[in-house]
Amino acid sequence: MLGSSAASSFKSEDQSKSWPLLLKNELPEEIYFNVRIRSGLTLVRSIPELVQDDLVDLFIFHFGTAIGWPNSVVKQGILFGVNFTSEFGFHQSAFRSLNRSSRLKAKLRAILRNSIKYALFFAGQYRTRISKRELEDQIQAVISLAQNKSRHIIWIQHQALQHRSIFVERLSYLRYYKEIIRCLEKFKSQNFTVVTLPESFLVQDNYLLDSVHLSEEGHQELHKLVREAYEQF
Image (cartoon, rainbow, N blue to C red; front, side, top):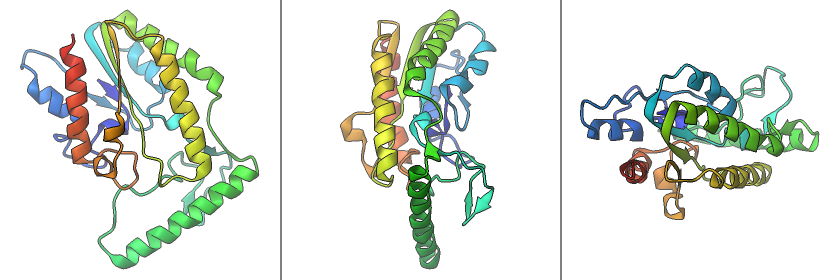
């Protein structure tokens, strides 16, 4: 199993409640189940991981849609509390502070960050990393490489909630998400299963505060979906 931070119990040393470990702990001991989490995993970043893999019975991928989020082209350093040099500099906090004063500061920081995003966007400095036209080629490359290493593949396509994102981000994210799903449809077969999150899954209870990473309840629900796909093989 290879996944982004969306497959982990985010920022927790105890991963036992993440869906990969929930699945692993259910399987017979003789089944070797290797779990690898790579923060910021993209299609291109997964290729070196796959090249090093041996032949396996099943690959499970859990990809986010980080490539659909716009990013700042400006690499200014730290300004107004935002790290412009980090790809995660504009991300929302995943946890709510217990301190009321800290929560107020976090809300003001979020407003400031969103204002900066709009300013960068209208200046042409806030845009996605890759062109939509490159998506299909990247997906094909990952799947072709995986098919050379395994007969069976489960591809979990993560989906974030959008209510805390600005309009520009929601629009970009949705376009890329739809394009990814369209590309994956071409590969679906008895040996290639795509797991997407149903509408009923897309509620705040299944996500952390950042509306991207999964809560404990979200991991339990996703574990059920993956288990159903796994049992088909």
